[in-house]
Amino acid sequence: MTADSFKSRCSRSIISFLVLLFLLSSRYVIANEMPIEGFPANGVVVRDERNIQIEREDLYIRSNRIEVSYTFRNVSDKDISSMVAFPIPLHQYGARGDMPWHIDYPIHSDFKIEVNGVPQNYEEYTRGLIKGKDYTDTLNRLNISIKDFNQSRWGGPFDRKFYEQTEAVQKKLTDMGVVEFEEPIEGEQYARPAWSVETTYFWRQVFPARSAVQVKLSYKPNRSYTQNPEQDKVTINRNKSINPRTADLSEILCLNDELKKWEKKRKTRMFTSVVDYTLTTANHWKKPIKEFHLIIEADTRRAHNERVSTCFEHAQLKKITDYRYEATINNFEPKDEIGAYFLSYPDEEQQPTELTPGERLLNEQIDIMIRFYEHKRYEGNERLYDPDDILNQRSSAGDRFLIKDENIKRLNARVLRNEIYARHGRIFTSPDMIRIFDGVPWYKPKPEFNESDLNDIEKENVNFILDFEKKKGWN
Image (cartoon, rainbow, N blue to C red; front, side):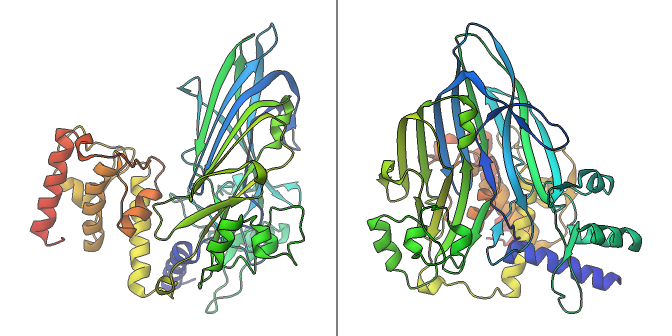
C-alpha cells in the first residue's frame, strides 16, 4: 500500500466515522445490576440473592444520558458480601441489515458508580466472541481493543490495524472469521471487526445487616439510530405483541393519540433512536422492587423538536410535558425490558443533503474538539489564560499540542471561551457548540444558568479570549 493510498484510506475512514456513522448489528443494551458468583471460561455466573431487596429504583433515560439510582436493603440479620455486576449483552460492529447504529468513542469513558455518595472503583470483564467461541486471547495478543473494535479516539481504526499485520496473520484472522470485508471502494477493500463484545462491570459490595445501601450509576449510552424507520421496522421493534413486518409504524413505536397526530404532520422522513435497558436481571434479588420510578425525556436542545415514546408499561406512563413521560410502579416485578424511542423529523428546508467538502471539514474539526475537551482538565476558574492556551491544546495528562491549522485555532478559541459557560451548564444555540458540548461526558445543561455563576477569574478569561479573537479578526 502506497503512502498516498494509505493517507486516502485514513481520510475516508475519518469522513465515514463523522458523516455516515458506524454500524452495529445487535441491540446495545444496558442491564440492571445483579448478584454474581464469578467469571468462568464460558461467561458470567449469576446467582440469586433473596435477602437483599431493591427498595427503590429511579431510572432516568435520555438519548445521550442514563442515570439509575438504587436503594438496596439487606433484610437479614447478617452482613452480606456479594459481587455485583452490571452486564452489557452482546453488541457487534458491522452492517447486518439496514439499521445504522451510533457509536460514541471511547465507549463508556464516562461510566461511573457511586455507593452512598462515594465514587466506587470497579473492574471490567470483556470478551470477544464469534458465534459463541471466545477469541479474546487472540485479539489481546494483537493489541486490538475488543470493546471499541479498535476505533478508540486515541487509537487507529481496525482497518489500519489489520493491514499492519503480516500477510500470514491477515490470512489467519480472515480464516478464523475475526475480520470481514466491506464492498471495495474505488478499488480498495476495507476490513471491519466481526466479533461480538460481551462486557460486564463489577465490584465487591458489602450490604450491612438490616440496613440500606445507595448505589448510583451514570453513563452515556450508545444508541441505535435509523433515518428510515419504515424500512427498519423489524430491527427497531420492541413490541412483542405485533408482527413488525405487517404492523403500522405507529404500532411499533407505541405512539399515543397525540404522538400519532404529531407523526402524521411530517412531510420529511423521521429519525429514530432507540436506547435499550434490561430490567429483568433485577429479579435475581429479593422480589419485588418496592418502588420503581421511570423518567424518559427528550433532549430539547436539539436542532429540531424531539419526542419520546416507549412500549414499556405503556398504560402506566404519564405525560409531564411534550418531551417527558414518567411512571411510578409499586411492588414491581419486571417481565420485559425497556426500549425508549427518541423521534424527530426536520422541517422540509432542513432535509439533509449531501455534505459539501466544507461541511465535511467542519465535522472533522468538531471531532477534534470533542477529542480534546472530553477529558480536558478545566482550569478556567483557577488561573488566567494566555495566548498559549488558545494556540495549543492541553491533554488530560497536561501535555500541550501545538495547533498548526488556522481554522482549528479559530475554533479552539470559541470552544475554550464557551467551555467556561459550559462548565456551569449554559444551554447553547449555536449548532457546532451544541454538538461539541453534547459530545463530552462532563456537560450537564442547566436551564437556570446565570452569568453570575462565573467567578472573577472566569469572567476575565472570557474577556481575554474575546479580545484575542477580535485582534485576530476571528469574530
